[in-house]
Length: 308
Image 1 (cartoon, one colour):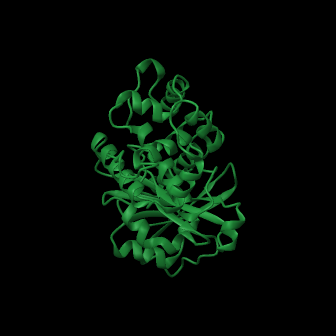
Image 2 (cartoon, one colour; image 1 turned 180 degrees about the vertical axis):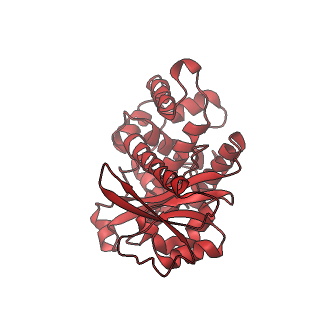
Image 3 (tube, one colour; image 1 turned 90 degrees about the vertical axis):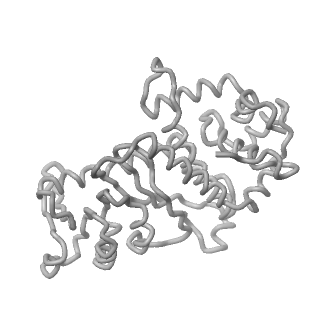
């Protein structure tokens, strides 16, 4: 992962990246103005207006490339097993700026999956505006690895979606909607019924995996909740629900930076004294950042000759 420190005369790519990473990872920061006050009074002269222009005009492909490279690093660190469970879902972040409303956007949707063994997320889809999850079948099929079972909730439940998953030989367990009729579809997919006695809820699960028993199918679906835990971590700790830019490009960059920060937490190693869970790593970074002004200064300590 390399970013050029000399490609732009005022705000280079490396500095732009590290400013975003500081905002995402430093829980003590509540706004970009606080961060720029800290930077300007500690030897890093950069204007928030310059940063805003960069958010609007810089291409997001560079951040997408970094995200993909980090995913590959996590895969090499934790190789895949014979068969993986891979819950997939989407989360919605409300867009409150009237500048988005004028463009017809009231929300942005992040569609993603997570490997339950390694913890790494899949490729992501960022969609502005309304859109049913089942409409993104092409993207979902590329997210699920060849030897994994995609676990999805009712937002993906449509026979067209399931047909497309089967055409690409993608294994799945999908919860069906209550109004979906199944009496004519047993030849295509196995439908498993079970009931949650505590909540008095009935579940119907469609799957194309023949090797699992009905009990294993229901147990597999229970693992879908892990994707909700991912969303909770991204929103609670990495500021996914605090979108600070007022243009599509800037929001896309911030979402990629949140996912990049999550992968960095997966990859870093910290002293065993502090723990080994993801939250332990995040808290350790808070300790380190409290001793430094920002990730920019931390990076300068490590590589002083490249930050100009």
